[in-house]
Each structure stands twice: as C-alpha cells, then as structure tokens.
Image (cartoon, rainbow, N blue to C red; front, side):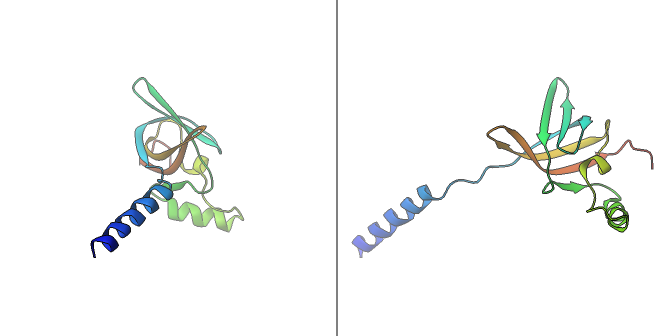
Length: 116
C-alpha cells in the first residue's frame, strides 16, 4: 500500500510540472490618455500602462448592450474599444503579461466622460 501511495505521489508531481502555469491576470486603474483599435494607454500618477487590445478584449461599460445592438444594426461586428472608451475616462484594465507587453483581457469603464 505504501508503494502505491508513493508512486501516485510521484505521478501527481510529474503532472504538475508538465502542465504549464497559466498567466495570472493583474489590474491597473487610471485615466485613459490614448485609445485606438489596437491599444489603450492608461495613466495613474506617474505610471503609464500601454495595453494591447483585440477582439477578445471584454468591455464593461454602461450602455454597452444598446451600443452593441446599434452597431450590429448598422452592419458592424459589434462594439469596439474606441467606440466605448474615450480619453479622460476612468478605467480598470485587467491584463496578462506577454513576451512583448501587456494584453488587456477586460476593460471596465468606471467613469465615462463622453457626452451622451
């Protein structure tokens, strides 16, 4: 019985080393300084974060459901980051570090300064 337990422990340890660790996400809160279809620049005090955005970047913003419907009705694929995030907005960006920078997984607009 001890031998089986010992072998099982070795097998579990080997599997733990074989499975690559997933990148942990971090967050950055600040004011938007620039936004485009491929990146967003957020500033907090003297620290500036530049995050890449893609079609997989999730947006959380008040009115996003209505704006997405409008975009789709107009024949567009849906709401994009430049459609929903504007210079001056206060945001929290959840991101993962990649070899060449930081990729935004989720952008949550806390305070929107865009005129409605």
